[in-house]
Image: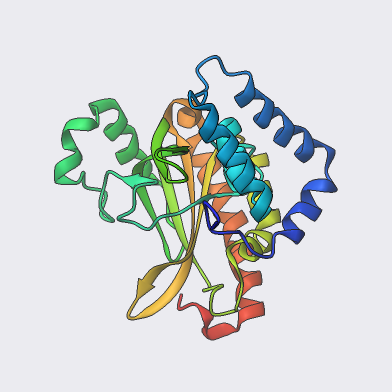
Length: 265
């Protein structure tokens, strides 16, 4: 039987960092048990399917197959919800996050009915007063948790939960795929940057996309930081300025490793 989700490769460095931090381990176990104790947690009504999942996970050494049955989360889903690694950025036209404005700060035509005046006014204030860093853009966007679940047999579907609307700053970084890195290895490269962002603005939602951007036919990685409006409204500009500095320092280090031609600034 095949794996229910593609296996994440080269995860040892990420788990080495987690295991070296008591707080990181605590976050992971809290997230896992919170899902087990959730009164609204989906419980498989089919005992035969439960047994099938257990057998499949055992035969394939597939921990994500088992976790999906127990808590509707894969291994990487749990790490993301524990604020240990970034969420996957699905591209500017992707489904997480969903962009509500264009690069010029204008509401997209099909999003005008879902954004209230206060939200857009706050976005416009930030857009006008924040001096964007090179190769970065500001958007109004919705970020979600992606919850996966079994449908028929070993087939999986997913749904969006816990929408958070905020200011998304999207930065271009060197293409880690061209450096022959897996997604997990890219997360390892930005580990310190990710956690510095969490220290500056805990509960900020960080997204990372490998080769998710393209300019003049040249691919690049992107890191996005979403600050929910209702949580960060009072000090939004202050947080954005600090996050600019954190990400630009990371970018500079990545360019030193990848070469000056790895990203056009």
